[in-house]
Image 1: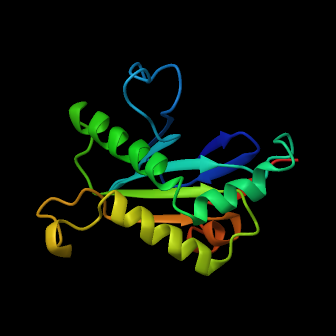
Image 2: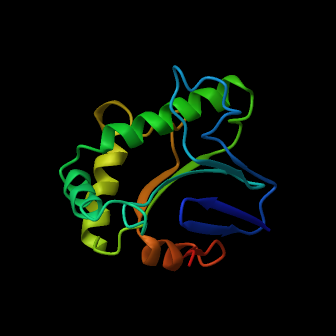
Image 3: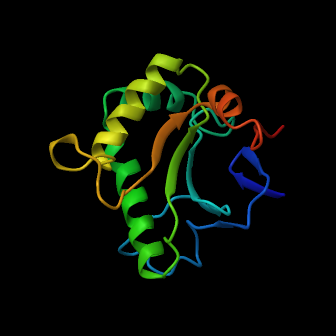
Length: 167
């Protein structure tokens, strides 16, 4: 079991082979490559996790509403896509992207509804892109699964990897 903490959110990862903070001083190429927050290796796949927490109690009061508006308008999609693609390239060049990769974005924003999350997930899937030319599957997929979650939807989808807000 591994505990991953980003800001005010804590994710418990079970059954991992390895889990590490990826976006930080050990990355070594932050001047030219963006990075997801965590890379988790399981026996059958990798999970790249990006965490955004505009509802953090220490964030300015207007941040959560502004973030939701920017997210739903698609203005944050490029940032999330670039973090994934640069992280995938980094891991591939390091010889570690040898299993399917899932990309999960956790947004600590309770006002996002399931339909909101579906819309943002679809925008992100198109940006990555999850499908190749003419909406056909890639011979070698860029991403296996790609989705955006709030805390509630994350906990419903990943009961073995619960997230909680720290007090």
